[in-house]
Length: 141
Image (cartoon, rainbow, N blue to C red; front, side, top):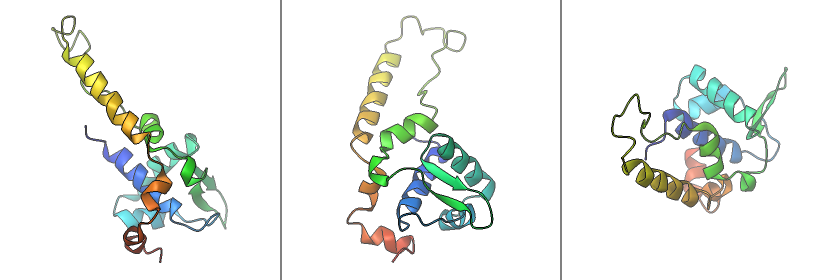
């Protein structure tokens, strides 16, 4: 299964925000520069993560962004469910004439669920715990 770039960079943004000291704000520009993604794309990602409660945005002169909840409460499987279009294949009858007899869609649905079930075992905090190399790469030490 391959995640969209939107979800990939969303997860990366959450990891970056989790690497900040608690209650420290940063800007979308800083996150954008950390991962070399377009600012417009990151604005859309942060907006969606904010709608889902994973990111808190503060407007104004001293504003910025930070995690909307503790990193140890952000379950990776939940993040993916909330921002990733999880349709593995298009089984709509108007798209696929064998859909009424196809067993592949059931197998793919089970595989997708197994994928998400595994990711439910990890939080954003797990990506940072005992990972000094990551903190160095994010310029957090």
